[in-house]
Image (cartoon, rainbow, N blue to C red; front, side):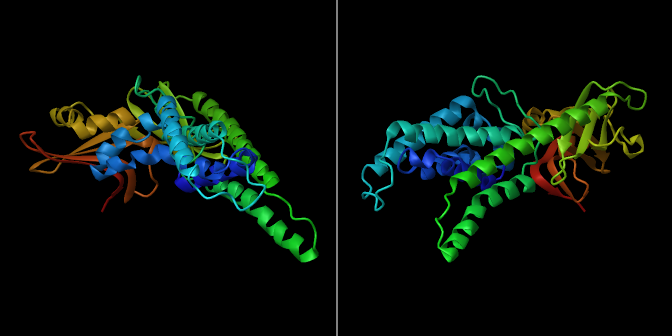
Length: 337
């Protein structure tokens, strides 16, 4: 998920009650709720290195727990030297509760990232297996709206209360509503996801049975999905609405698997391609003869864009006629012609 969603989730958890357990609980939750993305430093090496390391050990159960402990220790050491609180209602600094807040913040980050199609490697460094629930977008506007409304509505009510002289409402109820709304959205999308996969499984594709099925959410409509069905010879991309009784097979986009070739074999063994293939769930490659060599492009069709000029997650490799590698690159957003 985007870091704004992570931050708003941490704030909601804090306002739901943990901010009353220890001083600096909100600070701990916000920092720990974003700390797994410290792996962004690998982007300074290359985009391929970032793809290799992102959502790896820092997003694992072990890694997130260790990071939470480091954040808790740092805040506790700093907090002991901080000036005393000005408000008498501020709770005292408590290491146990501070550590718990940091663990909850880091765990919320991993859980949010687990819900989208990118996924996380929960078992690093012991296993590189990817886990993904596939029910929300990497940036989900509905989730952002739910969190924003839940956290900001109490501010409006406080302003109104000041005007009429009534008692100011707290932020706890709004935060709880936001978190419940998040859970409800996950439940709705989870139901729709199951329904779409069931519809996909009821069909054959160009007279072939599917060997793998998946469904990926649209950005805003919780009922509109992109279905992916892989057969022995092709990968089929089909828009599916969870409320429909069946799939419109006329909208099936077919990506035939490439024929084996020396150029493709060489390209798949290049380090950038190997990193990408470890990440990609539905890799698809095309080889073009450019006259003086070969242009190889590898996509992950779970992220297929409707805009050909801006295709996410793309590896591009150029080979000479003698199959010598001329260039290799990975782009999170590849801009075409």
